[in-house]
View 1: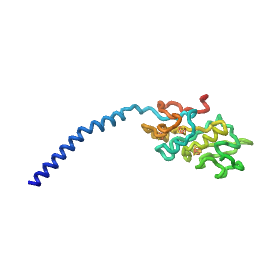
View 2 (view 1 turned 135 degrees about the vertical axis):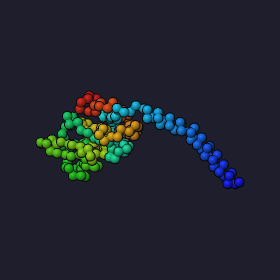
View 3 (view 1 turned 180 degrees about the vertical axis):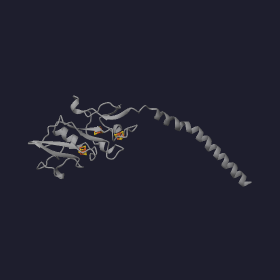
Length: 189
Ligand code: SF4
Ligand code: SF4
Ligand code: SF4
């Protein structure tokens, strides 16, 4: 008798739980379906380098490691300076390629002699983790030829870019796929 009662009880629990699930399912499925319906295909995330304030979130907030946001170089703007504010740590005693003199924490900037007194700086994208320190240094002491961009061949195009969500200067927005990168040397401020 007690066994019958237990069976009855567990069947009733099952039916009650199933009923709750059936009621709750649309509440779960509808928002997911709506979220998926948001038109995101055909769009990519892009940084406006004229709005970027080099806060450092690009390094820490991307879902990719290292970040899909990288430093890029507008060669046409560069002064090819011997003393480069994006390459040398501030206050160094001598200008050299010694690791302790470099501003980039991961050694992602190559310095190459061109001719007296000019040097070319090249970003190694594989090493760059998007910390934006060199971008700040170049902006503070140089002519701002280093700047941040989200590389579309690395970015997984999150529905809600976690860098964009926390960017203090609203420098990141969705643009149509195929829309040109905002290049510093091709657009006036
Ligand atoms: S989060 Fe925004 S302000 Fe900060 S480095 Fe990235 S683009 Fe620049
Ligand atoms: S300083 Fe930061 S942003 Fe600049 S090249 Fe190095 S890792 Fe990239
Ligand atoms: S969309 Fe995702 S992968 Fe791309 S930059 Fe933003 S957080 Fe990184």
